[in-house]
Amino acid sequence: MECNKEKNLILCNCSYEPCSRKGICCECISYHLKMRELPACCFPDDAERSFDRSFEHFARLVAKKRV
Image 1 (cartoon, rainbow, N blue to C red):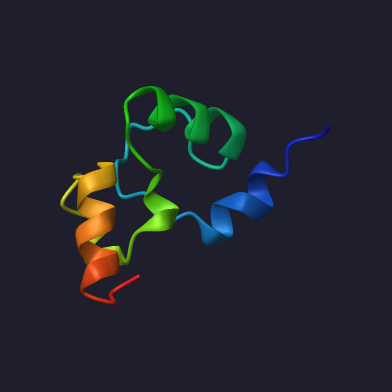
Image 2: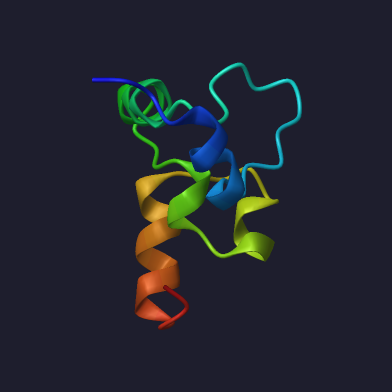
C-alpha cells in the first residue's frame, strides 16, 4: 500500500514540530499505541497541544462530551 503522506498532512493536527511520523499514519498509530497513547488526530486541537495523549486523558474528554 502506498502512503498518502501529503494528503494525510492536510488533516494532521499534530503540533509536535520535530515529529518524524507526521503524515505517516501507520507509523504514528503504531508508535502511540506502544506508548499507551492515541495520536493527535484523536484529540481536539486545544487538548492535543497539552501533549497528554494518554488513554485516560481521552476518556476524560469523552466523559465531558468533548470528543
